[in-house]
Length: 162
Image 1 (spheres, one colour):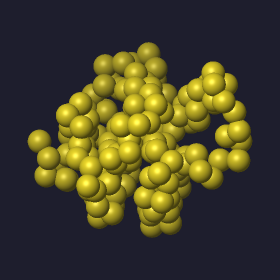
Image 2 (image 1 turned 60 degrees about the vertical axis):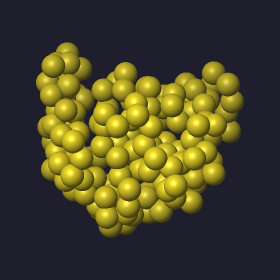
Image 3 (image 1 turned 90 degrees about the vertical axis):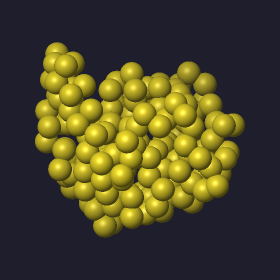
């Protein structure tokens, strides 16, 4: 494993796509993933569930959100994106057709295919040391922001996005 752990945010209806992404990241790229559908401890509700999810997100180095036409109905996906943004975690989206990328998410890289997931994994691996250093040094917010901007810039470049 590479010391990377991706929190896969998704709506329940997108569990199959999220599972395919998780499988690819784990088996092909040896990247650890948190996916709630395989979490047997997820039997909480209300504030306990929010606290539990936040704790699981804290164990992750980045967030990948699956965006579909059903995501608008989700309370959790936007909340998880907000938590990742607040914690300055690298953030990207996987757009499940026929959905399009919401305007507010176009700031960050978005994936549109499994080959894009491969590019995401490659950039994650090449920037992991710098990102992990930044995450450990919570007293260095400028270095952290710089590391995350570099991650986003590099991934957008790989994906031919501006």
